[in-house]
Image 1 (cartoon, rainbow, N blue to C red):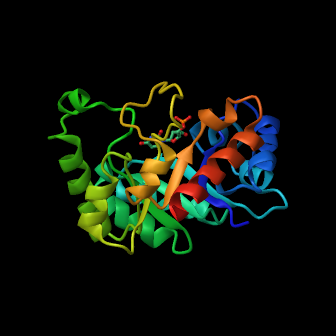
Image 2 (cartoon, rainbow, N blue to C red; image 1 turned 90 degrees about the vertical axis):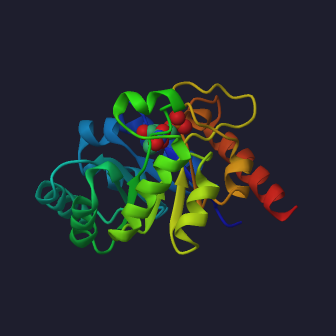
Image 3 (cartoon, helix red, strand yellow; image 1 turned 60 degrees about the vertical axis):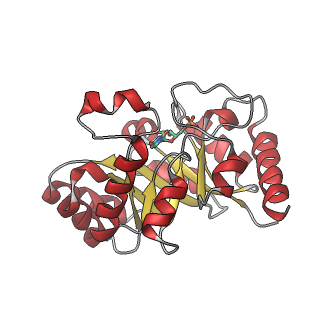
Length: 232
Ligand SMILES: O=c1ccn([C@@H]2O[C@H](COP(=O)(O)O)[C@@H](O)[C@H]2O)c(=O)[nH]1
């Protein structure tokens, strides 16, 4: 069975838990995601631990955001770990995005547009001109022009972003919640089935899987539901 286009966010407090979750979900999903919590605690070793023997793709979600020279050095430092995807903030601007792209030629650079935890009325407070789909589309276009080949946006904007950037760009959506699941700190959300139908290539799902009593079974159930709806 082809693994589902899901990146499970391994936001765990310790490496054993993260490696255990990775082992449970990797038969069912294409990718596991390492974020700030795990990387800042354990450093580069975490990548080999979660990759394990399965060879699952590892998405390194560090959301780099600094001046171009600093981001270039940081991207170069982690490129040797061969993550499949590395994130930078689109708000860092075109020169910064370009610096990451050039520093990590074997890793897909994904630009994070507007965090999925931000609601429409948060945008003005952080100086973004909304509404969210407009802000996301502007940041998406700028990022692709700077060389990013992947974008992170919420499922709410994925259709508009696809129309803006075309088919060759990988669209990644966090803010994914199975029907009835708690939203927690996510604001702009949709179900896995809806996000995929609207054009997402990779769904980021963390706590609905890792917080469930059986992460392997939950990942398998979401993967099966995606297969059913995409063939319907
Ligand atoms: O806009 C963004 C960018 C990244 N994330 C990350 O995705 C996961 C989501 O986890 P859940 O438990 O499914 O909420 C998490 O690691 C974030 O750092 C995001 O949520 N939104």
